Length: 190
Ligand SMILES: [Fe+2]
Ligand SMILES: [Fe+2]
Image (cartoon, rainbow, N blue to C red):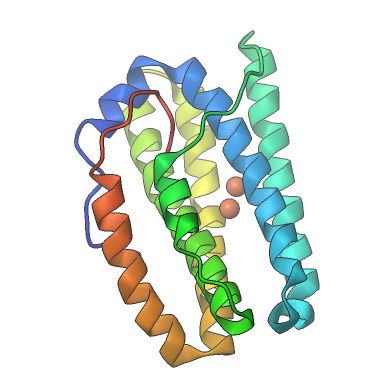
């Protein structure tokens, strides 16, 4: 169901496994940003009719954020600073201005972020099975929700303008493929 044109680089998973506390702090911020992103989408005229759906996503992301904070507390990991993601930054930098263009690009970016999260949480759930069953189950429990967000945002864009969404999706899938290959120093999910 995910449309990505490039695999998550092989070095990503070992880097995550080597610094799980940092990954969890980054994950907490990712869920926080996902909640604000759902709320930010409510500013677009084309999405006024979807405001309750977007609120529901924001609430779900806020719950995910709280679940990660609970995990941090249980594990004695202090909440820390967010790290900028060059991948997310690169996608968002290409959001065009203009009423129709902006909402479609923003929705596609939000969709791809959710889609990559869905994919990466699956990898983490699988890799953590033996090493950390508790964390493995936690990541597995988020996969469906992030996959639904991926699909919901993409459908929202298509309902605004299907042809424009397909054109921009083609552009963004190429951009994602290019950006995801760039190496990351820190143990961040994206
Ligand atoms: Fe989430
Ligand atoms: Fe999500």
